[in-house]
Image (cartoon, rainbow, N blue to C red; front, side, top):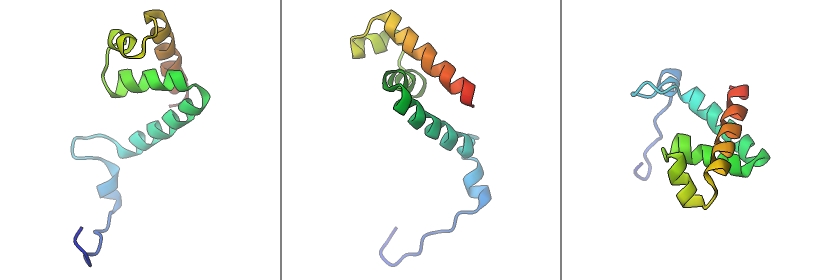
Length: 87
């Protein structure tokens, strides 16, 4: 935004859904839930973030974190189930 330029207004239609069809309200809700998960189980939140949001495979997460496959899978399942219970 240039100096002196007024910000454009955002109406409900603008905020409701992105052009690609993603529901912004759901994105915000998931973001808030991820913050809560991070506070209750940082490691599970980290694996969920890497697997679901960043798209890493569980094997790649093993390589990145140095955890065993079993540990990564457990954290993924725990975090995924935690989120499912709250959505």
